[in-house]
Structure formats: structure tokens, C-alpha cells
Image 1 (cartoon, rainbow, N blue to C red):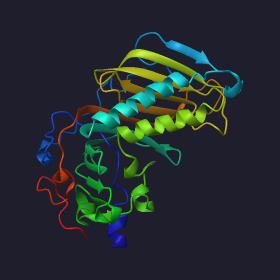
Image 2: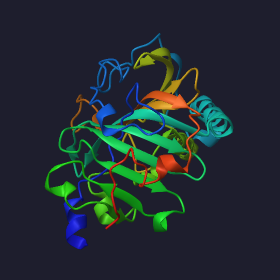
Image 3: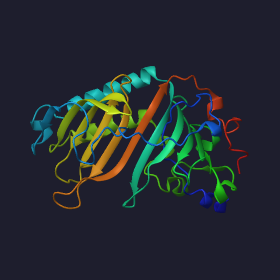
Length: 305
């Protein structure tokens, strides 16, 4: 079993959602390896101004402690994130999407990974089909809260690793986390929205925070409000130097997030740590248990090993 798990240590979790896939459980032949559109990021490059209208609410808290400076510049962003989270929890029961991720692991920035995903809120359930790059294409992952001993089920798409079959892994185990910043239990726009609220609540305890709103930014053709937060000076209190979240104006959910570390040298470009883009989000598809069942005939899990 250990040998089989080692073969799958690279399995997981760059998620990208792809258009025109059947919600009821697309067959493998229906899974295109669609490239990320040129405007999907909605930005002009690391550390530069996002595409969109002129900045609004450009506020700098300076070095004063937030407690003595009145309203913190993060308050409007926190209010927007909290409003979106409440709306999501009240109105969205499930969704499909194409997710693209890129992460820096142990100092090395990985390739973009692409996945088709189905997500259900209750019980929290995730199905992933990897679209690319080629070395991960065809991999599938399923996780359902409270099922399969709370493990994720996964299998490789091709090659020697595919001969291993389906394996069961603890989401936060060393093997499951290889090449990933977060476990599958953290996947999706709801958890991203929750994390944004958590970070804003934490950071508003401190000063040294610049907040800009950029209306009419675009992510894969969707009109968004981009909220950009900058901590100019490296502090142990802060998790990032620059972060941007793109909130879909219609759906009120975050569909792109990017975070950068401080430049390695004065005048240098911010260093990308992580970026996640959710494209072609289709809400309330009416997913059932079958959409998160490894026995679904549209999937290729086979028997659990």
C-alpha cells in the first residue's frame, strides 16, 4: 500500500474549471485541456495595477495603530467579503467550475494546473478531474465530508502511476499534501471567502495597510471588483506583501485570488506565492450523491485499493 501511495504522491490539486462540460458527470472524452484565457488574471503583471477603472478608496493607514486611528482601511473590504460570504451561504448549494491554480512550494513556483470541479456545500463534497498539464491529465479526486473514513480517493490518469489504481489518503497527510499549499478540505470559493474574512479581521488589528478598489476589472470576461491590499513593510504580523481578490459583481463570490511576497531586493517585483482562478462557475446544478461517488460510471476510479 505504501508503494502505491508513493506512486501517487504527485496526485492533486491544481483546480481549474472548464466551460461546456456536462454537469451530470462528464465522461473523460468530454474533458478538454483548455488553456487559461489571456485576460483570466485581469492583471497587467505582478505588482502592477489591475485592469479596470481608476482606483477608488485608496487609503493608507500609515504606521498608526488601527485602534487609535478610527476606521481601518480594510473595513470596506471586510464588509464586501462578509456580504459575499453570507450571500454564497444563503443562495448557492453547489456549483461546477474550471479552476486554475499556481503555487510556490519550497521556494519553487510550479506550473499552472487545470481542473474541472464539482463542489457541494452540504455535506461538503468535491470531485476533481485534472485537465492539465499533461503529466497529471486524467487524474480524478473525490472527497466527501464524513464518507470514506474522511479520506480523499484518488487515481492517476495514465502511465505507470495509473496501474496503481485508486488509493485512499488522509487529506492532510504528507503524501496528499505533496506539491500543495492546502488540503482538499480547503478547496472552493466558499473557503476562499472565509479565508479572506479571517485574514482581514486579523490584519485590521495593525496599521501599514494600503487598500485600493478597482471596479470593472475582468476575469475571463466576468466583470469584477478587484480589491488590492498592500502591506508596504515586511512584518511578522502579515502573511503577504500584496494580495488581490477579484469579486464577481453578479455572483458576489471571489473568482480569483493572488498573493505576493515582498521583493527579494529593493525596487524588485513582488514574488508570486499563490494564485487561484475559478472560471465558468455554474451555480445550483442540483448535484446528488452520485456526483461524488467513485462508482459513478462516468468516472474511472475502479475498485479502492
